[in-house]
Length: 106
Image (cartoon, rainbow, N blue to C red; front, side, top):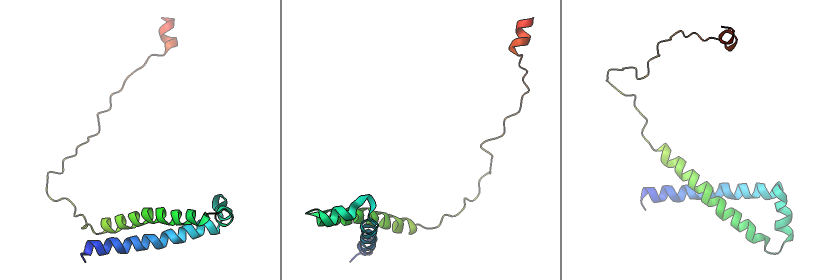
C-alpha cells in the first residue's frame, strides 16, 4: 500500500475516533436537547449515525490536512540580495490650516 494512502486511512480513522467522541459529548451533555430527540424519537439512531459520518468527514479531512501541512520542509531564510527597503518613511511637511472663524472675520 502506498505511503500516502496509508497516511490518509490512518488520519481518517483518527478523525472517526474524534467524531465518535464529539458526538458522544453532544448527546451526553444534551446540547440542543439532542439526547431527548435521539432517545425518544423513532429513528433517532439514524441521527446519531449521520452525526458520526458527517463529523468523520470533517474531522478526518482536517486531521489529514494538518498531517500533510506538517510534512513540508522548514523554510530557510532568504539569502543574498541588496536588502533594500521597499517602504521608506515619507518626509513630513508642515501644513497650516486656517480656522473657519478666522477666515470669516477677514
